[in-house]
Length: 358
Image (cartoon, rainbow, N blue to C red; front, side):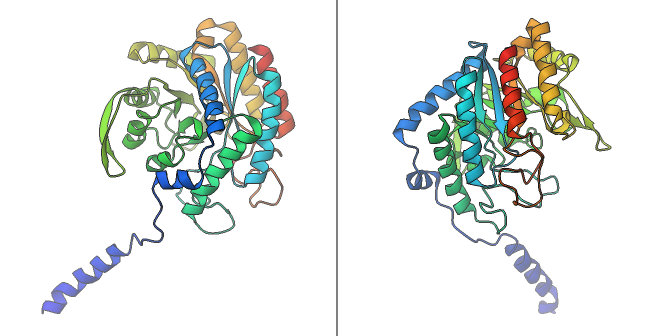
C-alpha cells in the first residue's frame, strides 16, 4: 500500500529533478574578463565612441546614429572583414554619421528552437557550448575594435548575461519579444549607456513607453544572487521595428504619422531624452531586405520636411552583410544564416546617401 501510494510521487520528483541537468559551470564575469581582457588602449576608444552615441541621443549632436551589420554574427572572420570595411567607410561619413557595428550574438527564436546565436553556439554546425561562446564573443568584439576603431551593438536577450560583455559594447538593444519583460526593463535601468527598447510585437506605443519609463527609473531588484539598486538610465529610448497583427501580417510603423504619435506620447510621459531609432528591417520591411533602402530614404526626407521629426528620429538599424540575402547553411562567405541582409555595395551607397541628407 505504501509503495503504491508513494512510488508515483517519487518518479515524478525524479523526472522534475532531471529537467535542469547541470552540464558545465560557467565562470563568473570577472573571471571571464581576466581570460579575455579589454586592453587599456581600447578602453579610451570605447569611451570616445560611447560619448558620440550619447551626444546624439541627448540632442547635443545633430549626427545620425546607424547601427548596421548582419542579422547574426555567426562566424568571426566575415564579421571582422565587414567591420573593417565599415571602419574605412567611417572615415568618409564620420562628420555626419556615428556608425555602430551590429554584432548580434544572441538570437531570439519565435518557436524557441534553432540557432540561438554565437553566445550559445560559437559553431552553428555543432551543439551548444556557452563557455566557448562567451570567450569567442569577447575576442570577436576586441578584435573588431582593433580592426575598425568602432564599438559594437548587441541585443540583451538574457539579462543575467550582460555582465559578461558590459565593458565591450557601446549600444544595447532590448528586442520586441523582451520589451515587456520586467527583468529586461530593470537591468536596462542600470546600464551606463544607450539602451534601445523596441516596440513589442503588438506595436503598442503605450507598452513601449512604459518600458522606457521603467528603464529610466531608479530600481531595486534581485540579479545574479544579489539585491541591487540602480539610478535609472536616462539614455533608454525607443526603437520602432514594425508590428505583427493577430493574423501574422506585418504592419510598418516608420511612417511620418506614426512617428509623430510616438513623439506626442513622449511629450505626455515627460520622459528624458526623447529619441527614436528606426529599424528598417523586420516588420517595417516585411523582411524584404531591399526595402531597407527605400525606408531609410523616406525617413531622411521626413527629417528634412519636419524639424520635430528630425529632432526625435536619431538614426537607423540596418541589417547588412558582405553578400546580400541569406542561406540556410554557412556555405557562402559573408552571407547571413538567419534573416536576409543588404549586401555591402548597397550598404555603402545607402550610408553615403544618408550622410548626404543629414
